[in-house]
Image (cartoon, rainbow, N blue to C red; front, side, top):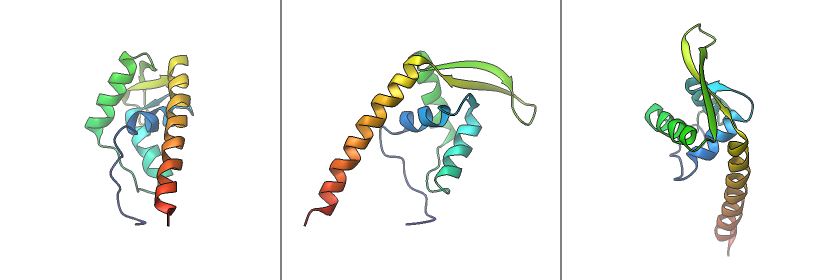
Length: 110
């Protein structure tokens, strides 16, 4: 399936965003670009879903947001991980790794 766009698996958007922000503060478009780059365009996040998730995670205090200027000198909201966000990233990463391991066992079953 190389080169074809994949649908996000339910429940992974938060994990993906938290991981993208692990590298430092970023605005929404940069998160989208990072995901496309790191997955060679296999995964793409729709803006509506992204900003809904960013606002939800900010309310949960996983993210801190402040206004700044993007690399194009445009006003943008920059998001960064809080301590709670880092803790959530660890928990979601562990849960996802366990899930992938279990599904892999099913796929490889003979």
